[in-house]
Length: 196
Length: 168
Image (cartoon, rainbow over all chains, first blue to last red; front, side, top):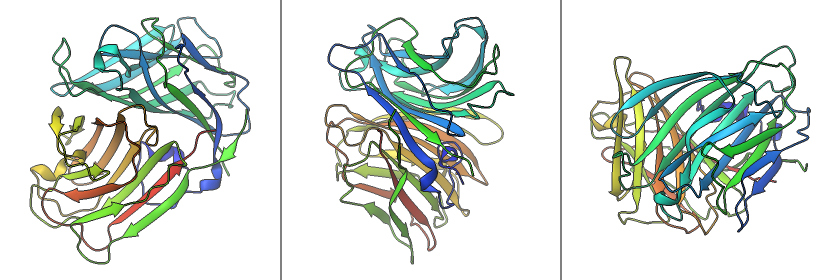
């Protein structure tokens, strides 16, 4: 069984550890960063997994993480999500947006200097040129105190896909939805998972 | 781009009798994330929420937010300034007589600059599904994790495996 299923479909099956590879990691330095990119992603794996911790300098409690594939900025990203803020469960969707948004996947300055959002994202069959590329995300943020809306954080389950191209994914760019800068210690780690 | 094989099993525990808790200690700091997979069977009765503490911290430094669905409705809840984190709330109000599967992701567990955020996903076959996020308000690296139930025990045959994932 591939480790890619571990986050969303926990299992007691033995994992084939040799199939899961670290490809690249970026950790934001003391000056912050407006974006983080993985380029020249090799085509030698079957699936990709991205694991992150992140926060921005937005003057709020949270921020949304934005992802773009292969530099595509046209209105061609769709997604569905379900999330809970500690009191209510909500479902939403986006159609024809210019980015894939991982809702509240990032902390921000109001959440506290040491509080970061986290997430795990799977991108399936990223080199298959016969398919639109599907992403699925589990992301969360908790800051132990009430923000202006009364929320103490959010847990989000989300999936989406890019509809304008079936090209293999070779580049992924991460940004803040509010154009804020990633704070120091924000980290994105890219992993590749091989098929048999 | 460099590439190295990872997602390495660190330790596995299988209960050979009913136990009140399971502990992983002396966790090496050589990985970036930890993934703890459990497949547990609990003693009957309610009040059996699965919870955890790290590094022996019993202070009010934990908080969590979750959503779950039981086939009829979906719920979100939260707990703040708590003495433990959570990986399973199904036992809180429902009698539990089936195996449950959980996956906890301790993100960036070994850094000493950020509070630690822990994602979890739980499946309880007769009850529903759940996912949540924990915050442990400490910048210390995580070196031990103890899992236990608020009431009852992990029954014989419950399994717990800790994996390490190392970023390039």
